[in-house]
Image (cartoon, rainbow, N blue to C red; front, side):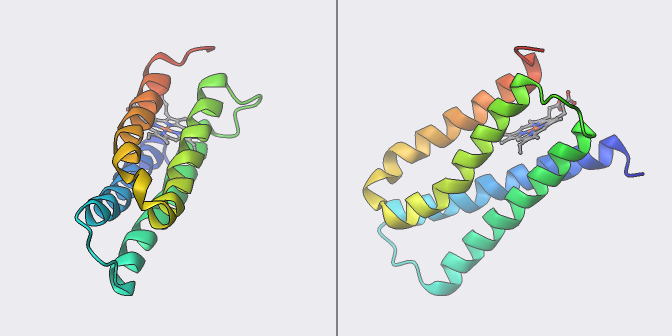
Length: 120
Ligand code: HEM
């Protein structure tokens, strides 16, 4: 049985990886840097593994709670957005300036959801 606290450390570590991967790639894009393959791969792997760790940690803490509370559904939508963002940054560089602020808003919204747990 994995302790709740271990899942939470995992969850937060995964989050830092997701934000690091997205932030790093967005700044490189905003700087007009040509994203060589090793750079893209480093950002994509950090982001992808981070997403997986967020999911495992998050559902580990939920411990199979059913039905899924509304606040968790909201966080899952934020997770999906943070997941899709990597492709947007790579394919739509003209959106990166706006995605930067949307990332902060989305992560802040997820923090609001977990602290206040609207809908119980
Ligand atoms: C895959 C979707 C996700 C699930 C199932 C999930 C689930 C959870 C659960 C069950 C907790 C523990 C709540 C508590 O102890 O009261 C938690 C904590 C947390 N989650 Fe998530 N989460 C998900 C995605 C996210 C995302 C995308 C973010 C931010 C961008 C996030 C940020 C946090 C934070 C900061 C905490 C710690 C709150 C505290 O220390 O009390 N989570 N999450």
